[in-house]
Length: 291
Picture (cartoon, helix red, strand yellow):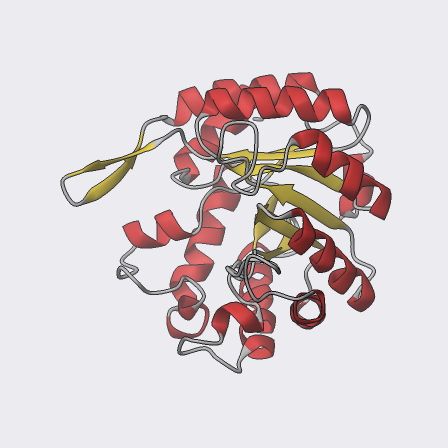
C-alpha cells in the first residue's frame, strides 16, 4: 500500500475513522473507565470497532492510545505500562484491518496545563511523547497523529518529542472548542504559523464544538495555509444530555454534508470525532462517491 505521504499527494481524499470513546460506551465501556484499559482488558472489542470503521469505508484507523502517555496514565491502573499499551494497541489495529488500511497512532494531550498555569514542563512533555511515539512505531503504525491539542506550547513540545523518536509522518490537529479558538485562545493562523514550519505532514482540527464552528475553522485554516494538507475530524454536532444518555445532534447525512464541503474546499483527510459512528463514516464515504 502507498505511504501516507504518497496518498496525501494523490487525488483521493482519505477517509479517517470516527469516535473511539463514545462508540466504546455504546459497546459497554463503563463510565469512568479510560478507553485505553480496553486495549488489554477487551481486545476483541477494540478490534471490532476498527473492523466496523474499515467496513464503513475508512482508509485509516487510529489506535486506542489517545490518553496513553506516561503523564496521563500515571494515576490510573495502567501506570507504568506505556510501552505495553501502545505497542499492543498498534498491533490490534493492524490485526483488525490488515495491510489494506493505514494505521495511525493517536497521541492526545497530557491533560495537564503548561507552565506557568500548571506543572507541565517542556522536558516532561518531550520525554512523554518521545516514549509514546517509540512504542507506537515499534507496534507498526504508519503515521502518528497529535490530536485534540489546545495549548500551542504543549503541541510544540510534543512535536519535538515525536520527531526525536521517529521519522514517521506526523499530523498535528487542534480542538477549537471556543468557536474558532482553542480553550487557551489559539486560533487557526497561530497553529499554522507555529506548526507548519516544523515539517508536519498535515495540520488540522478535530473535536471542537458545532459543525458551524468547524466550517469557520476550516475556512481560516485554508486561508492561513494554502496548499498545506488539512486533517479535519469534527464532532457529530453538539452533544445534549437526554435522560442519562449523551446524544449528538448531527446524524450521518448531516455530518457527511459538512465533511463533503471540507473535501471540496481542499481537505485531504476527513472523518469524525466524538459521537461519530461507523454509520457516520459510511455516509461520508457515500458523499465522497465511494462505491
